[in-house]
Length: 94
Image (cartoon, rainbow, N blue to C red; front, side, top):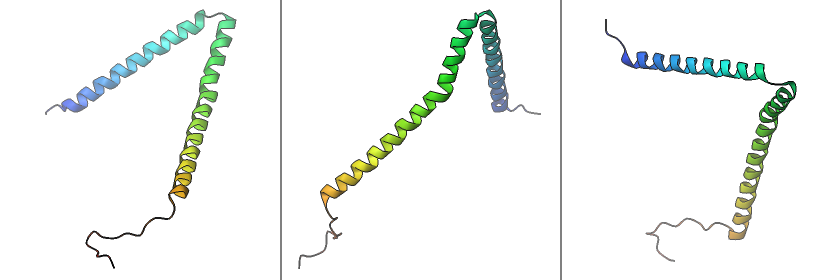
């Protein structure tokens, strides 16, 4: 039976990612266990800020940029006037 090297490499990558996540979780748990109560409260507030306010700010930024893009394209179209009708290059002037 032949070995599928692509699957083997993929599985090895998944194992490495799992080990890295496990180490990060252990490091985080150790850091939280050694924190004082005020430091833990600040960390919780920062995490809450990152989870709630940053996505809201990004959403509002994208929304206002889209509104600005639409408004500028409408204003530009109004300044240009009506579109000229299409004429092929081989049409003769009447």
